[in-house]
Image (cartoon, rainbow, N blue to C red; front, side, top):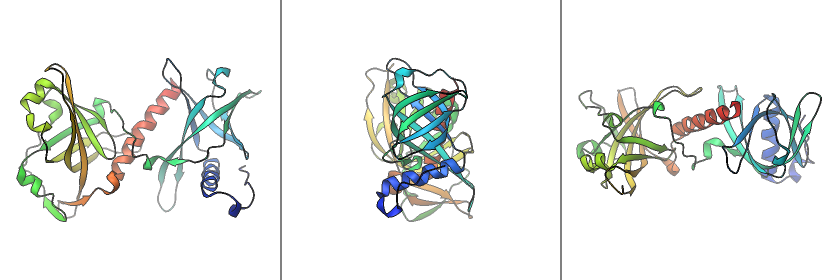
Length: 293
């Protein structure tokens, strides 16, 4: 049971939000993933559930046998969890917070981990800095056009018809081009110097039309995206056999309409919410995999 710490009006707003979210996590039996950083190896993670919450700390029950170390005491850890809400429609929201691992307690049933009470809990969808390096298998297709006529279609407000006659050249099949990382606000390509020499327009300034298809992750299905992008930055390749890095910022998102065209809407606060859900799902899948290794 979640303990309420005094009257609601006496609590700072951030702490009140923490209490509410932890209460919802208990009610929905949410699983917590505690990531413990290691100095020389990959982070160690354990899967837990909330056992008890007090004014100063959170007690987590380790859900299965795993290697734990008393050397973790005093370490700063990152904790991840999600809350599934069924009303008005089913949705899953990811959250994370930082805390100090205070203690490890062995019991007859297993192990309890005590964490310090976090000052705040951040919704995953608002982590605009969350930038992932997707596996190549997750980026099914990536096309980009420099054609000024196509670029002109993206002036706001605008509705455009994407004609079937437009070829969809998949840059990922050209050779020497890959998606280095992607976030809810942009994408960075890694391009071999030799490939960039043949596709110099990729590194030039200006607006582009981008189409990409991202693979299914967890409850996120295969998604097709249309973006208007601008080239943000370029890190040159030292040689033709090395990679250059080209960053693109999403400025507009093209959303399909009933007329089989696209409505171009400006990207607000540099954040495409639909893409944010996908990047968070990829990240949480990685965290869960680490937890089971």
